Every structure is written in structure tokens, then in C-alpha cells.
Length: 188
Image 1: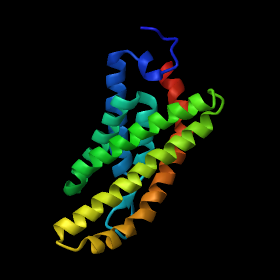
Image 2 (image 1 turned 90 degrees about the vertical axis):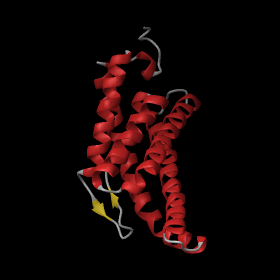
Image 3 (image 1 turned 180 degrees about the horizontal axis):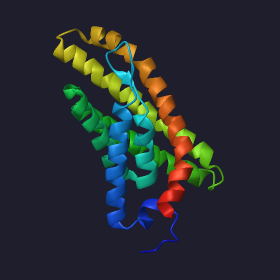
């Protein structure tokens, strides 16, 4: 396998990639479950989103999305948030996927000069998917499950936007700080 390519996920042997994906799923799950700051919406803010972003950035679109989705969904499953498991899997997988696609685009646009801009920009794009995804899911859940009107679902779901934005900001900060360190460890 050619180790000179710039696409990190192409340089990793398949076994190493599988092990790293399992590790990132576990870190995402633990990072989501261990440190919890409750929110008024019966949810919580956690550092797991940093690992969601890192999953995509370190493992690429497919493996990163799977690691992020599985780790986050496992956290909801273990934590008793059963109704969120399928939505969390999709939303967090998309968060990681969007982050890595935007990261690559920004790296190419800036001709590999600014990793920091690419990390922050991709984190913001990925976390925007998370905020929008949960907002839409909660509208559906509140309207369908509680037999409320769509308007009532939208109004109730608005309460989750700010805590999700705060969680997203923490995720971007964590990913931006850890990405250079983890990249060096993986390439060693």
C-alpha cells in the first residue's frame, strides 16, 4: 500500500483502520456518557461530539461515519434514550461525513496551508448537521409521539437548539485540539 498519499484513510492498512474505527466508536460512546451536563430539554451536553468529528477526520467518510454513528447510538442505547438510537446513528454519522468532506474541500481550497481553518470550518459544518438533525427529529418525535400539532412540535424543539449549539462548539474545540496529536499517533 502506498504510504505517500495525502489521504490518511487510504494509507492505513485495513486491520489498523478497523481497530481505529472500533476505538473511535468506543471513545465516542464513553465521551458521550461519562461527562454529562443536563439541559432543560431532558438531554445533555457532552464532549462526545469531539470524537464524532475526529472519527470522520481521522478515518474518512465511510469508516468515520460508521464509528461516529455506532459510538453515539450505543451511548443512547446504554443510557436509556432508546427512542433516539436510530436518529442518533444517522445524525452523528452524517455529522462525521459532512465534517470530513468539508475538511478535504477546505484543505484543497487553501492548498494545504491552513489546517486550523479547515478543522474549524469542517467542525462547524458537521455540527450544523447535528443541530439541524436533532431539531427536525424532535419536531417529528414531539408531534407524532405526543400527538401534538406540528407548530407545537416546532416550538418545543426550539429549546434544544442552544444546548446543541453549545455541545457543537465544545466538539469543534476538542476536535481542533486533538486532531494534530492523534494524526501524529496514527501515522507513527
